[in-house]
Length: 153
Image (tube, rainbow, N blue to C red; front, side):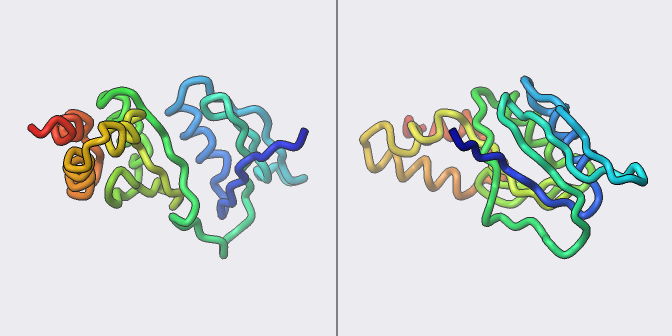
């Protein structure tokens, strides 16, 4: 059966990026590093949250954009804060509505695992609109505030 593996292009820091991501997420590991004859990192195979990824040092000219992002669903505000802060560390930048760019320019969305339920699950269009409006005012998502918006508080 075919498989799909996300493959990320970095100028020259694929191994550092993979190590950073692996340190943030459980069930993650560096699986192999292919090197050029002079010892430079070429391709890193790694696992994040049990799923395979590859990263390559391909040189400049291929910037990351938010047209492709990685969504991380979390259960608690503490987990959201830890991952958000870790992805922003050393030069990342926040965007809006739970989106950020890490220091390599990779786009991430750090969202509550119950976000879909908060946005549409109640069946109450007014509650759904309140959650949407609350989210639109946030940079980093605030789970208690989103829950309060859903409840009309």
